[in-house]
Length: 430
Image 1 (tube, rainbow, N blue to C red):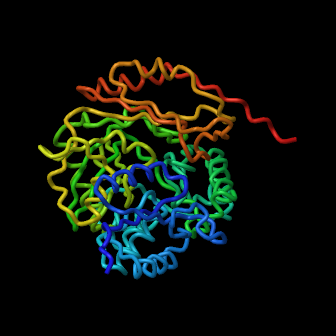
Image 2: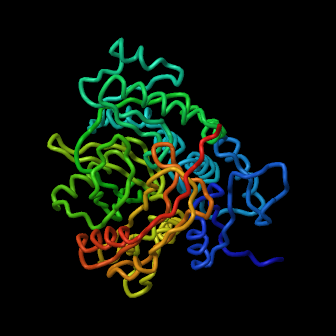
Image 3: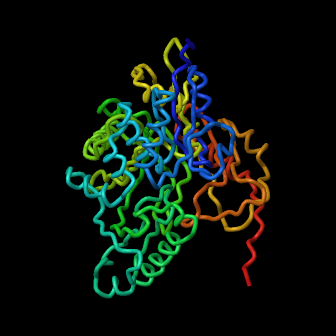
């Protein structure tokens, strides 16, 4: 009789997910076996040689069945997902296997801004007024008939894309028409079309909510929300596009306001039915109160998780967000894991113009800035760069730590100014 192996954790991710390696490292640190579930070629037998489960995240029901079948031979102790697209698959498979996770209906609502808005409003939370329109709607007719109303600025957005992709503010009829056509063109691109998601058949139109914006990284542990960090976003996000740049924690907002933010997110998580797993929230604050803008059943995206460090007092001072999440999904006690005392932050290096990436100069100089912890350029030489609202990635990330949020923000801005990007222009096709 063979000895049982270490507990197995299934990691669901796209083939290009930044966080996959960080989760794999965390699993190995905990003595776990990790297996991947990724969207890849179904024709070739194990094309990467890593025994991953081949999935298509546009078919969560089918994916869940594949995972259940695989688990019959090699049982799973937990399922962890990276990014939005894998959340429904993770929820369905976890429910079928009796593992801790968010319920499938909650994961579905978080993936659809129209469904989410409705549930949040029913719970009495402040959300923008919203309508969704079919992709083939005529924008000039929408303006002419008053279907959208332009008495105040509107924000157009896809229902499921993340990281502000396809989000455009419009203040006039002509701006609305151009924005609608631009979002529609994005949703009709082969890159988005191949995802085969029903949400890509609609464009949501919302009232623009002014004010300061914060991001909240949290977990729900068997129905109880716990906030890990509140990030200030010191750069104004007023449009016409909404490219996020700097996140800094701890927040400089008053304790009272931070407590109200936590309470708002807790109500939002309950209204959406989130039960166990990561939560990433986006909120805006103005004179009218706190507005719940987005709730995702996932952790913070990209490499931004590196801006967060945790520790188990007297046990381990090097606990990553990924390790914390794996422990959570295994059902282990995470109440003794706390974020470090230092202030920290990340700058998502924006793409200033379209073209082909050549190199980034000044990195060594930028790394000498006091407080800078690391600079990671994720763009590859000759990679085509596409800025927002069509783009889906950043050029890289700058990380900083220090004694105060102000120090961290200044370090990030100073380091960024020392970087010189070399981008070759994209020649027009004749």
